[in-house]
Length: 351
Image (cartoon, rainbow, N blue to C red; front, side):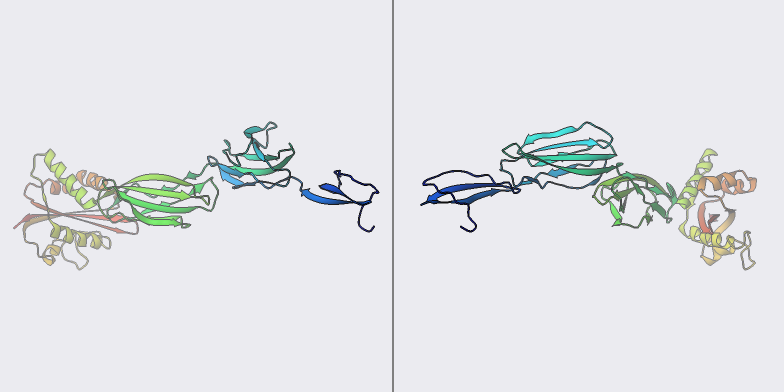
């Protein structure tokens, strides 16, 4: 008979094993003098179909092993082992259990091997190996240009990340230290140079966030002292007057506007004479300021209120103006040009 294995028997029941990459379980049925072998079930070879969440992580991150099997005779259990590539011995993360989701957390920033084993009910085992690279932990190496600035100036944030899993993005937030809520200066972007201009003369907090492609975030905080240099100079003047038992000077807003005008003028011509050839006090008339007496101090290049006041107090003529007992009002101007600061104090005895 074609395509059949026949025997002359009356009644037979048997099982045959055929080796062709699988097991064939058959039943033999007697039909007169002929016997047919009919396959009932084909058992596939056991396969390990396990997967892993990532092959590149940073120190401190975890890996998720999703153990899966196919074929075999079912009743699967799973074991997971791992080791540093430089090691010989394996660490058992899970012995054979039916739990198919296993978390692995490598301790070092180096290369690892992960071995996943699946076992079926017959004890047959299939292995699968993964190579894992663990980078150093994400670090935030951001910096800011200054920690003390003049009101109206900007702080430059240079955001920088190292370690982690690359492709960094950066976010910058800031707030007055007395506030609870943050202002977002930049959401997560790959732009690493961000300018922040705080509005008030007070202390601010700046938060720089670095995020890698796995979503891990590293934060870094800075404190920036924003100073009103005009008010600082006035306060320093009155502190010197207090030491000598002299009445404090009153801040005069209009007088400060006139002093600001003079600060711009001395950036072009550093003299008590104005660019139009008139004396410095003619600026008071321009701003409608009435006075019985007036004095002016000028300075250039000093970077802070403290440094300019130190310069003036070490000059007898300038110190005399600061401690003049007849003066009642003060105005201060500050102008910056080409990175240099120009300072002006105007004093008057108000009319």
